Amino acid sequence: MLTIAIALLVSVLVGVALTLFAKLAIIYSVLIGSVLFAAIYFLAFRHFSKKINALMEVVQRDMMANRVEKAIKTLESALPIGKWQLYMTGQIHSQIGTIYYLKRDFAKAFEELKQGFSRHWVGMGMLGICYMHKNKTKMMIDTFDKAVLVNKKEPVLWDLYAYCLEKVGEHEKAIAVLEKGIKKLGGHDNLEANLELLKTGNKMKMKAYGDLWLQFHLEKPGTMIKQQTKAMTGRRRTIVRR
Image (cartoon, rainbow, N blue to C red; front, top):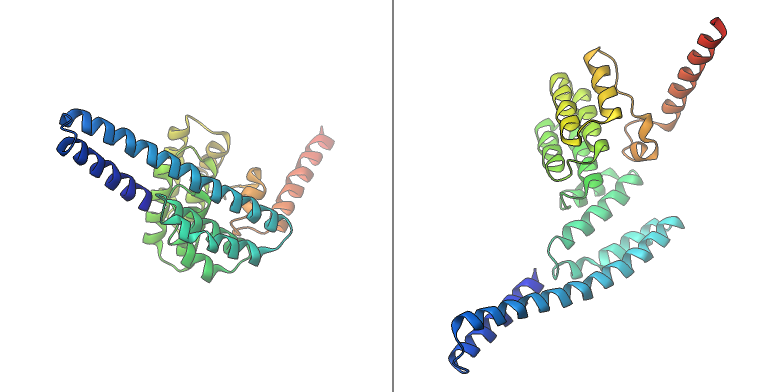
């Protein structure tokens, strides 16, 4: 945000100075001011993006080495940079909240995710689940609605939304969400399969998403393994009968 304010201030001051002192026509002063604004913003954006990218590389290395607390502190150190770039602070809070959620520190995750960025769909999904666990269904729905509005091409998010709706007893809404998701995506195998399961009174199956699904802590890995084993056993029996 500060980058925009400074770029705008400088461009306006230069434009006014060119008009008053250089006697330049207003249209040319505005044009020069606009070019100056764009140049300042671009250079500042590139500068801060490089700093953030460098920090994110450190965070990734720490996460890979299971140095979770160090990764969180690195992200927290980046928060002051956020005030210089639009939406940057929200993205950082989403990253921190996601890490807390993955380590099952849901209280801290919730506080961070509330300040997150709506385009960070994983963080928004986790926030929606937090509201679900707090029995705040309206807040859960509002969160997911905001998330799918700006992340409409993420199939996991649509399935997650429907899964949570089904979990809180909103069966018809869950069906409607999947139908909407399928329409937005122009069709999707997993969404279509889960839609059919809900319409026939069965539970949704999310194992196709693997670790992407497990990160939300709504289903234990062992449960998915049992489901897969059961399905495999069923197929073997069918083959034997034949």
